[in-house]
Each structure stands twice: as structure tokens, then as C-alpha cells.
Image 1 (cartoon, rainbow, N blue to C red):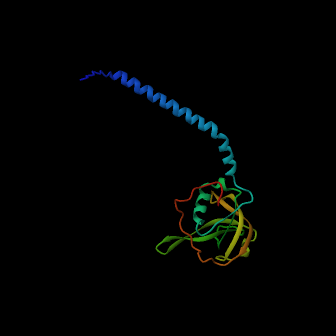
Image 2 (cartoon, rainbow, N blue to C red):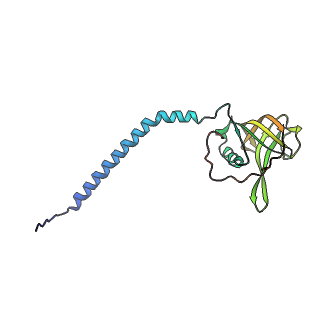
Image 3 (spheres, rainbow, N blue to C red):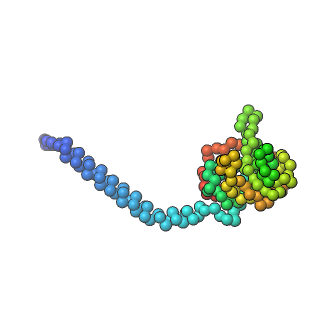
Length: 184
């Protein structure tokens, strides 16, 4: 029969574990540094690719309307210069100038209730269209002010009369969208 008597020294065990943890931390640090240094060129390419394309026109639909509205209002500066096209009805408030209106949609909030949501738009031709008439616009997102608050304003380049679509109402924004520098 073989009997081994091993005496464990708590100080030596602690020192050994400490050395092992330090070595693991150093290895992880080296790997992280390597990843950072080798990915810097890739990140620069991605930053350039995420910029707003000058000729791309994003189309808003009933499905993405409030998500896009939400993300543009949340980060106006990112979307300045983005070209956009969508339809809605003309909605004016008493404080608007003659070249301003909201291109609006009704957002369902449940219990047969809805809210008017939309982008403030600006066009020299705005006064030619009656309240609640449906139009399709193409324009560019700019930054403006309304009641001392920065808001996106669509500077309209093209506006035309259209008919009310089948799916005129829009749903509230959901949590599934991921804000980007471009509206798809």
C-alpha cells in the first residue's frame, strides 16, 4: 500500500492562482490589442460605407413609416441630406407659414383611436394643395426649428397629387428597428 502525505501551503496555492490569472489576463490583452490593430483599416472602410449615399432615395411605406420617423427625429444630424419619398395627407396648423405643412398619416394606438404623425415639409407649391388632400412627395431631410425645438424638415423637390392608399394608417414604432446612417 502506498501512502502519500501531501502538505498544502495556502500561501503557495494563492500565489500560483494569482500568477495563472495574470498570465490569462496578459494573453487576453494581447489578443484584444491584435484585433484592434488589425481591424482599424476595416473599420475605416465601414465608416465610409455607412455614409449617406447622395443619389439614394429612401421610400417610406406604411410598414416602416413610424420607425423611420422615430429614428430621424431621434438623431436629425445623421440624416441631413438623405433623400426621401413617401405619401400622406396635407395637415396644417395655424402657426405654419404658407409654404409649410405636415405630410401626415394616422397612427393606430388601439381602441379605435389614432394620432396624426408625420414630417414637417416645406415647398413653394404647398399652398396649391388643400388640407387633407393626399400627395406623394420627394425631398431631402434638412434640420430646422419649430417652437424653439430642432426638428427634421423635408425640403420638397417634387410633389404630386395622389389617391389615398389602401393601408393609409400606420402602426406605432416597434423595437425591431436598428438606427443606421441610411434609411432603407
